[in-house]
Picture 1 (tube, protein in one colour):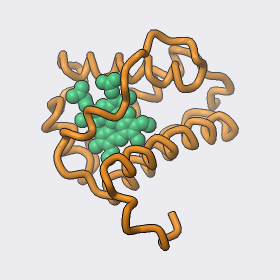
Picture 2 (cartoon, rainbow, N blue to C red):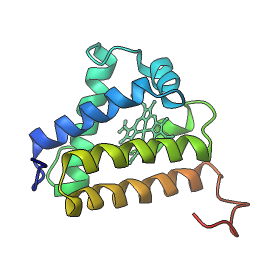
Picture 3 (cartoon, rainbow, N blue to C red):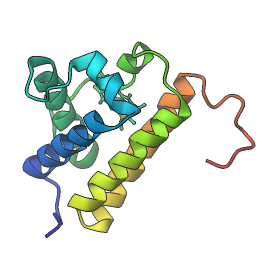
Length: 134
Ligand code: HEM
């Protein structure tokens, strides 16, 4: 049964399953392995997953200790392309629609999409794409 509400346990499951898939992806896997290693149970991943639990609780419920700034780390990861963000969104879409009822999955995905567009703007990726339909 898909989750029909958002709470800490459902968010934790979503985040863990998403990054499990990310690590196995041919485009995203190497980027995350370089930044955090390839073992979701190591200390760096523990920190990252915790940050992401709090981040998504903040985005979806507004009740969370997350007070960070999501963008800055992405400026230092190494070259990120539109294709990288598209793959990220594709995997995220698959994860949230697998776990949540469509209305909630849609809310997650819309928020992720807005953030991804902002990140791409910040990275200067949208400058010459104005006539493309994304
Ligand atoms: C091209 C796609 C993306 C890649 C490769 C990527 C990769 C990463 C990496 C490597 C980190 C840093 C981990 C660390 O060193 O602690 C990070 C942090 C983070 N990412 Fe992404 N990311 C991507 C897209 C996104 C999107 C679209 C979102 C939001 C919906 C997002 C949300 C976050 C957040 C909240 C953090 C933690 C920021 C903090 O420290 O407070 N990422 N990401």
